[in-house]
Amino acid sequence: MELNEINAVKNILGLHLPTDPRWVDLAAISLEDILTDHAYCEQKAATTCISLIQKHNDKTLLVKELAPLVTEEWGHFRLVLQELQKRGLSLGRQRKDEYVNQLLAFQRKGGNPEERFLDQLLTMAMIEARSCERFKRLSEGLNDEYLRRFYRRFMESEAGHYVLFIQLAEHYIDAEKVRKRWAEWLVEEARIMNTLQIRGDRIH
Image (cartoon, rainbow, N blue to C red; front, top):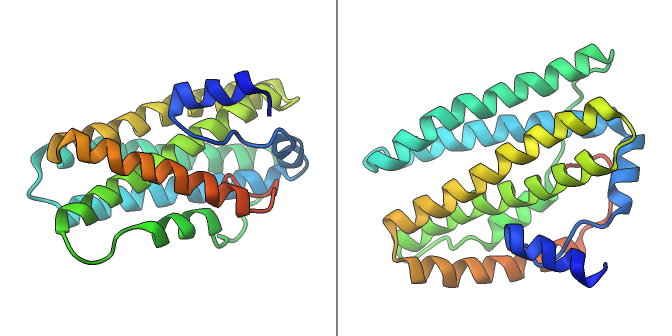
């Protein structure tokens, strides 16, 4: 990666490692698979927000902000499903998400409930940030002009979601603690990205 590209990703999303440009070429070859995986990513985002609302129903701002996000994420699922159908493609089976599973393994499981809550929010922020970066790649690198615009809209949406989860964390938890833990998450996410095979049939 060129230094200016790495710096651009860090400045926009804080991510330490840009996606390998070869990923877009592989994704273009596996369009049915990438759209299927994208659809399930949106579905899981909606259900995770529902789960957070159920677990933290006493947190008024969280409930207020995540309730419409559930609707938005499910709307995104429907948009991707519609795109598959329009192209005569089918929604395939949901696949194991190794990237997300490794993020979940980094979450603190015991001890302080506040720390566990923080990690839940930062996990979502990280997934949204990486999704945004991947959608940016697709919006710039695909040959299909319609799909470039399609993913441009998703990129803009995911950027807002990433910010929302960080803001929620800082609303409920000391901002210095949030920033310190987020820095640890960024290091871990870069490590995870370095371990994963470059595959065109996955969003992450």
